[in-house]
Length: 109
Image 1: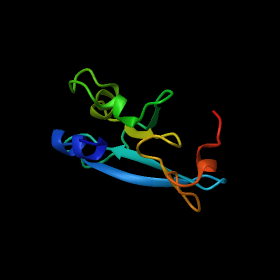
Image 2: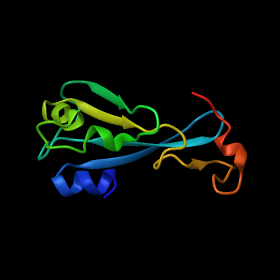
Image 3: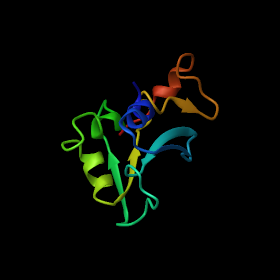
């Protein structure tokens, strides 16, 4: 399962958002709310950003009482998850194709 499927499977409301960088990379962000919540913004926003060669999955793939992203959303925070360019969720670009244009991968951290 991908991030969205997994969160839905666990019963969490989930949204996908896309952010386009100034150099054309389209980054996929995830936003989740607590189960049965009516307001996603009770405790303020929190952004989880994964490490090198990882994705937003890392913050939710675990038992609900051990996954940092799920712990925070259940505590009432407005939880967002970023995905860096080139990972499984962020391989889109306004003009480059990652399968055909080697320059797509010509970026640095």
